Image (tube, rainbow, N blue to C red; front, side, top):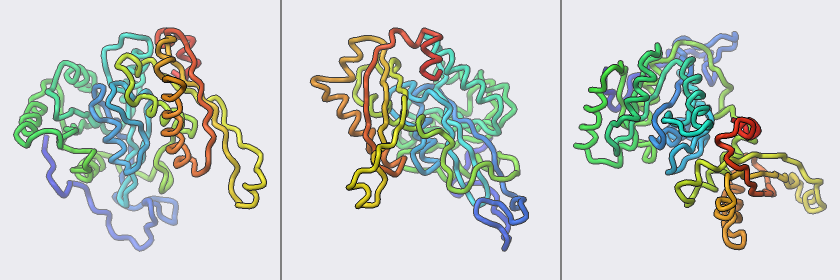
Length: 336
């Protein structure tokens, strides 16, 4: 186990006059020394996994929130380098499930872990290594993939506390750790070092995604996630777990005379249902006189228009699906 310092530990790509962007050669092969593969980002809820994924990719591909269990899908973010390509898989936090949804999220993480090249285990520096972390350590201890620990939120603690945290990680029993890298995703500190370390553990091979592609998530999934992120802001503790968002349809309007004159695309109608489990939760999301729902729509529409590169009319409706987290049929209908 080693603690990589500033400057990283990756290999330099040999000079090749025929090398193209992304590592591909005109012959259809790839540049010598080019590495590519999958790195699964794991950790307990609220360990900074999604924030770290976004920082590594350099763009927002996963929603973030101070609420645990924000991530509900295995979101893929793609890191492009001249010497390699990392496909990051941001996963829901492993936890002790209390609902059928929780069980399915844990199953999703385990399924993802079974077929990756590197595991990035997030252990936040502002919290002591606890039972939840040790539970995950046991879950991943049998994996063949090398385990790189990211000591996240390093900016939130003193240097003395950070060093204590790193020593605690190094003393974790039953877990073989390849590298430990303290990082601050918010400040971008040591992100380049972590990238070098992860890349160094990947096998040599061709790029897995085209140059410039940052995620393979469908647009409707990304839209639903942006709306859920906006809806999570400032809500009560019990509500985040009960929120689900489904994009029902996306329909392009007929172009108006103004659209034709300005030579612009017409509005895209996006119809969305936001599901909660109880009527009281519905009232919270809608707010007094619909004020809260308007805020959610305004905030999320900005992100959706940036994502799609066009103007959007967002039609939001809040519906009650009683105890959907525990109902197999409703879970299936909501995409879990």
